[in-house]
Image 1 (cartoon, helix red, strand yellow):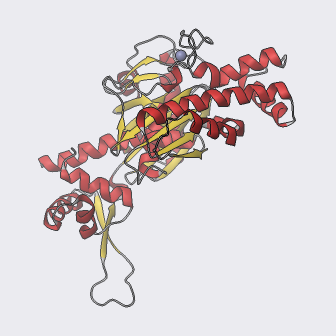
Image 2 (tube, protein in one colour):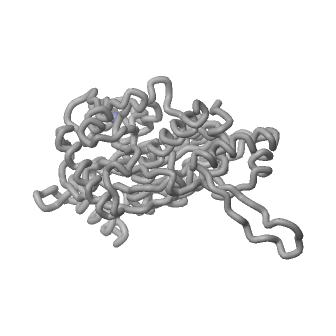
Image 3 (cartoon, protein in one colour):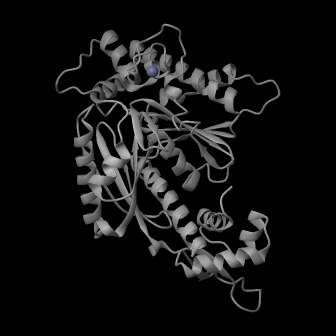
Length: 394
Ligand SMILES: [Zn+2]
């Protein structure tokens, strides 16, 4: 349970603007205890008062609402990936004030180089925002793969050479900032929880399709990470015993049937599309999609098969967690075969549905920036906790 001061702050932040009395109603605590916390948060410069336009029929003083003071602090978020790193700086209310990206073309990189690239992206962001490094309170970083968020360690990532790497401390030493790291799908889920479709929901799941397949889970308004903070690896749940080889080294993982490299592997066999120096996986995938759209039956079969495996993965999520909403997100959602009506029908058929209401399934093809915004949210979350606690100690 969060301290009341932070609950008050989070409640106001999530709603944009809220009066003291509405905060008390939402948190089911007395207006007096809310007023005490609000006074401290105003004193610390974390909140500010705003006059809300009065209902013309009412008399008396115009009503006053509370909102987060945007200038209370700034944090940055960076999503590291194989083709492009994206970054954003947000103010204390979570509003982006600068964005930048850094294209690259390496599948696996030494951590040192990745840290330097993150530094270069941060420099771009700062120049975009007209800020100094010392204006940034913290940095959140998202990477694909298995990340131990609590220890700040990248256990395994498809974009980093080596295993068990102290990503957060290395970045922090190099950049001179507190750094928080997490799996990228968790950060996207955090963005949905703070700003997106999940804002009003206590329990929902996000499944992401990018180079790999990721997942984030919100339980009781909080991101669930598992006992060792490496949970929700839906991409490596098995959908076929002794099945296709996955890049994790095991066989039959969902990812080995649904991800980019799975589709490219099939395309190179069925369509005689061979990966050349100039033809990246991305180019091959686009070509495969174009051919499917143009009526090439082999190309269509590849997407349809991937869609069926995805349906099995989604049905497993629903059977296990009973979420009120499943959000499908990530760049590959532009391949509409992956969520065609027959895929959704298949999800329904594979879900144990005796007397249960099936959750809504929403497609959210937000751009790259939302991942970086999620990373910034991770930093903001840590800063909020520290600043609210600091105020409590004062
Ligand atoms: Zn795997």
